[in-house]
Image (cartoon, rainbow, N blue to C red; front, side):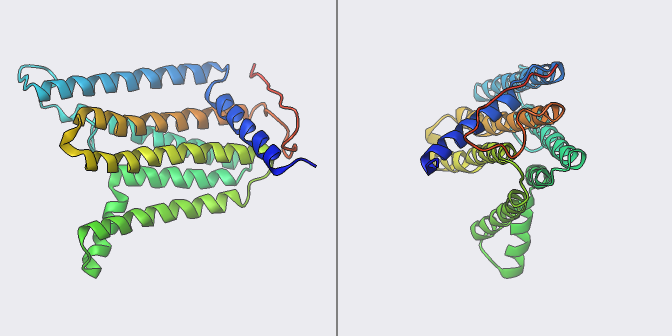
Length: 254
């Protein structure tokens, strides 16, 4: 009988393989979409660097001077692009869940929609402000409560989803998106906290690129992986309910 360590090793290996299989696959639609997304992100980052350079050196005659829409601010082009990727990912998860009767992906549609509401409409700030006003709490406490509320909602979706997962590959895929979500939270919360602690002692442009650029990249990775998962449904990689210590076999979309 396989040991726990042996099963964990094979489970981790399968998760890595599924992650690469969803992210890099021989399908024309996926390749073109990945190329377009990559080019847009590179363009947005380049424009942000040009904006930051013009602002730092007060180049008032430069095209990017004073154009906040090129910065990582609410309503800016990078943020709008991220909102679009989040909504598209949400739609893909909904479609896969409905079309292929895989109810656990409804949970990820819900999680992505919560992320969209939080990014686009400041969901956790709104909840915190309402509760803070009603209970007379300090702004720091109300912000923490608001963030905890959206985090709890996402956790509820996650738990409901994992309870209905069927098959080892579906479970591994679920864990793959969980890892992406954890990395996204790291950039959005962890790096943001570092940004606040380091303050003026570090380049604000660099910290913003790491924080907001990292969030945008992970959002794109989740989106491309969701698209890859949908395309893989047409030709399943491995049969459902195959034991974890089975031999892996890849298939190629024709």
